[in-house]
Image 1 (spheres, helix red, strand yellow):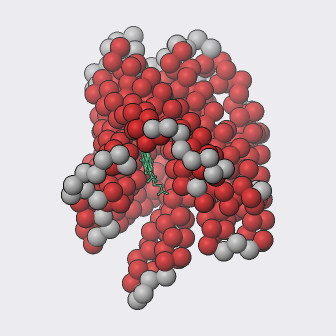
Image 2: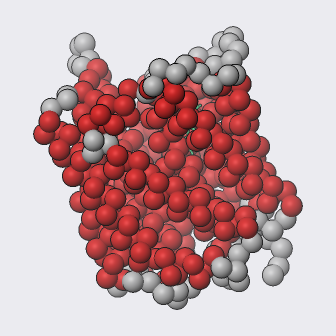
Length: 413
Ligand code: HEM
């Protein structure tokens, strides 16, 4: 059974635009995998990667979570509509400018504008959510998501200072970028997604263990800064840094276990009557979250920590496990449950299946090849071609979702 379609129609338009941003990011991702096979004259790989990663984070995940937050905070405030459209304009600039110029004054200015708009959004959402969701188990998660936006962007401002030194310290440059990435992926994306899921389960009055949700929140919050130690360990392999990281990843694992135990009865009840596709989205979304915590916990062993940042396949596999698996798949299941997209039509269902299949296949290939590289076993035959073909499922899926699942007028029923 579906929750009633959301009563605020502009939210569907926002979600559709966010999905278009996902489709653009996915096309850029496929282009990068194509460049591994054949050179494309005039296209700079690094620029495409910056355009892809900034656009996906700031255009897809940021905006879709923003839409979810605004629906909870009270969309009647007109400022949210202005903020959405202004932010979307910066996203267009971010995609275009990074693709053509890479890091430049113009692309950095567009990103800075996005960051400043996000601060205004945080400033409005924070009190509105506290008022509307007072006493709700979702509130601490949602607020921690907002706090993580501000925290992570400190890394971006530090970049400016680091780059203005002559010559710039490249280790600090790397650490500042990793701080931003860490705060986004493990802070904003995680707390934002978990908070929206809990808010939805609460709205449906499904059975939640609130005390356990609070414990999980404290554990996850305490793990956020220490888990950044993994990036620091790349630059400075001091035993104390490994110890802090190990503590962080273990706290995170405990937090995820407690969260899952707290919501499990509710999730089971929610998923029981669903079609296989929707069950698949929930299972792979929440499953990726659990798997991410387990993979992350393995770096408590210093040997695994060194392996994780030495082999690029593991880094890329991990980044997409969080962004595409834990965040995107869970958010898609949630959007359908709330009536903001519809996965009932054939084309829309196909889109979601393609995205799910593309995610699973590319993750398997990335991790398997990563393991083989670490063991000095060379390459899976035709690895880059197979990876490219599997990657094509992702933009195909995202395009179908953007143009067939997220129509502004949804069928009744
Ligand atoms: C939708 C399909 C997607 C595809 C096909 C894709 C593909 C790629 C590829 C090919 C790379 C470069 C890998 C390399 O240089 O070895 C990459 C990097 C990256 N992607 Fe994606 N991606 C997708 C979705 C996303 C999403 C949704 C996000 C974030 C919300 C994201 C964030 C990133 C980041 C941050 C990097 C850079 C990682 C680093 O350099 O450490 N991607 N992606």
